[in-house]
Length: 284
Ligand code: PXG
Image 1: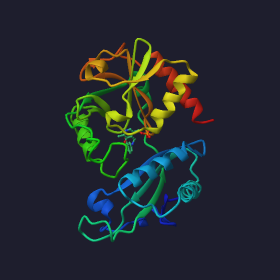
Image 2: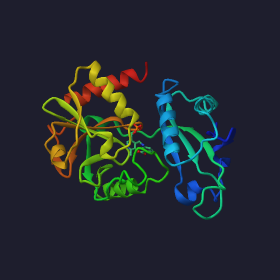
Image 3: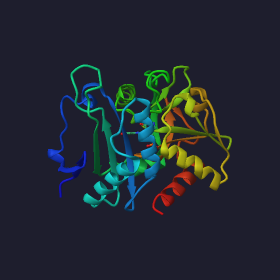
């Protein structure tokens, strides 16, 4: 069966699921989105994703023409239509088709729900860890469009991703405008130093990742000392363990940064413990 895509209340086959070339989502990257997992037939942290979508939209003065409950129902209907048990959801709200100018006033927002499969990192990478670099492209300044907004405009992150790929890596650390460690291009970042788990605070200029928040919650259950702390590249280089969190990657260890081996060069014990607990809980 072809993938069925929900657009403004109607299902279309993947190849017929089309939006206008006048859509400001295309013309200007004007819109917001969410990437969400389906585990064992259940939409993971559904309410949290919908809250973040509405917050992102509000921040960019985009009016979503449905209530949060209606968006939740549309996502559930699309999961059911595609009979998906494990998969990935892309929920998108664009400013919609308008004139060719920047002025959004003529635009009619469009809501799109795609339910498809997720492409996963190879299994060995979770044991051996990722090698990453620090990108020279910085994360958006919080006084521009705040990085908490999950907007359709990912160009800074894509530039950093291209730097990673050119260096033969899959991810890159992005620094903020003060030169502090912010996050990776599509994942939040954690380090472990002397038994304490640390991650940059939201005001470092990062996306408030839903996986990040879930992992922070696990530290209490597992009695792992945790703090939000501003981090430099030095802190990263001398860390005992490092890992990334994100909807796609889940919890994945990092064992090399800018050619420095992190810890033992293998997935560390706290990373393993959090990853195992994560894997267990998402299916409960
Ligand atoms: N930071 C940024 C900048 C992100 O885009 C995360 C952190 C993790 O957030 P969640 O809520 O997923 O734990 C993201 C995730 C990709 C990709 O292909 C990543 C994201 C969106 C779309 C694609 O890596 N966002």
